[in-house]
Length: 351
Image (cartoon, rainbow, N blue to C red; front, side, top):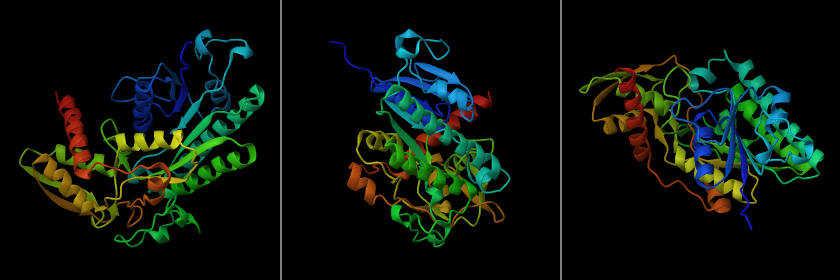
């Protein structure tokens, strides 16, 4: 008897985390459809089928959720009886970026409209698919964010409170955070009212190779790696946003993917932090990159730059208890891999 092959739909598969998830699922033997406005920037997609399109378009989402088996691909019409729901959906698609994109206020309407619309489309069209097929077995993962935690719990850079239960009373520091909070509530509402099988994480600063490293939407590890890699071999001065005493923790991409897969395979719906508890100041992050690079790096602080909260660090009590997962890699190990990759990108551009 032929072994059943699981089918997964990865939304946002052209992005950093989504493209890594596609690779992981393929390594586990899944059949994978990837969907995004764009293909991955830095490698070929590993998806069996990659569909380009806009997930804010409800009709496109309806068609994307339909698995047609060996009867045809996304673009073929097949009789309704051959259409099946996916086993798993991974929802990474969002309008997002680093502090320079999220905290200026100039992109708030786009961030909120586009991301909420995608999540509404995915949940409602999957609900309608379940009704149509008389079947409700699809698991849907939603990649929430630590940006939804209250600003008042993150004013002390040495003692931020990011326990899952600290989310209320709500007071995110950006519209991006408010959208993330609303969307995770949306997933839980569909779970309560329609018994849909949701899984919700709160990611804390995921980084690694093949992440955005230039152009204004990059996160701080990639931005600092880029700035240091662009210095001459002897070193020099880089611009650092803020006074550098703000704190964060950063989780390497492979560990993020592992925790996400464990969440999907569990009966725990979340919300759950997925992050590292190795909290560092931004100045310490610069020192780590400098050490990895072998360069002498000076800092010039841009005090009027957008920063986000003063302190943020994952609290992993729940993820350890519920999923038996914890991060294993030090920040320096992850930075070494990321710096090497970004340095290669810069060298390729210069030749």
